[in-house]
Length: 223
Length: 206
Picture (cartoon, rainbow over the protein chains, first blue to last red):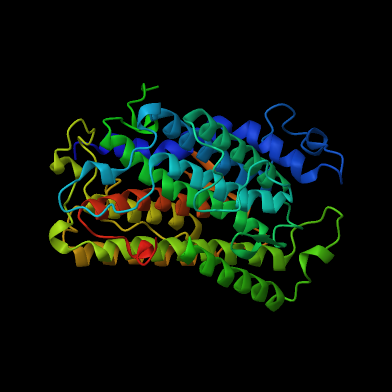
């Protein structure tokens, strides 16, 4: 198949990003997991590997890694769409035989995801979002321009990191109230990632319709 | 997100029932002292992962079944959209087969099952051509996912397993596979709409 290399790279993209972020993410996650209740003494506990010791993964680090990967992919796609195309919708293309009635514009896709991110992640941390996210379909009316929308998106990911890093074995099963009703913290945190990647897949198509290859799918220099 | 709301309510109930079935107290009453993971909490994580697999199984199988047999080799490249960048993208069939292949590849890491011998590359077995064959391949891959979710226990959720050229925690591998499927699902949705088909999960909305 012509595009096998590309497909293999696509499969690998999560893993490559993960590898780059592994040490930092795990370190941060472990601190969040153990901090406050037990002084961190990883070096003393691993005398056989004083320098290259790989911190043990935690629930926090494992979930935060997913948020980090999503953030990188999703923000890159949002930023790849030029300002004058930000309100693009396939409905405007009038593709013969298609059914794109009332689908979201590109901007609405991004706002919807950022709103859902806040709705799920802020519920986990218990924080009050600095935006009006009461309408999970549309998002805040006050956020309009490309710059405002991308800032809104990035801010939502910051909430995601806080949510992921707050997870512990003790609290992951706690139920919090989200847009959707009572939801376990671990589910709210990880489902937000899956939900966003669903929309990411749609936004990728919006980009391609406009002649833009999504950044994660562009040719990468071989090592 | 209506379907998601209903789904989450069901998950919350399932989750709570699962935790109590394990004899676990509500998490809020758990000791704040650092302790090893307890069985009820880890069992709950497994049920959460399984719920997410079920959600995207429903979504992906839904769109796979919604695309007519004679459109299975559709690619947006054939639409010749002026200015579009669709050269060498996957066909609808390849999206499905690729998703199923990734499901097999990642989730069999957890179950210890062998990959099907006919999977040679990232788009799955070349001999699977018809809609019926491809949908069966997809459904079978999600069955592996359910078995994989059930392997997650208090003792092994953070156990690192081989994953491509490195290792990843069992919990991460299980959920990253769902995320991958969600990404591909988003693309399948667009392929359906290009063919005048509203995705099943979006019907009756707006």
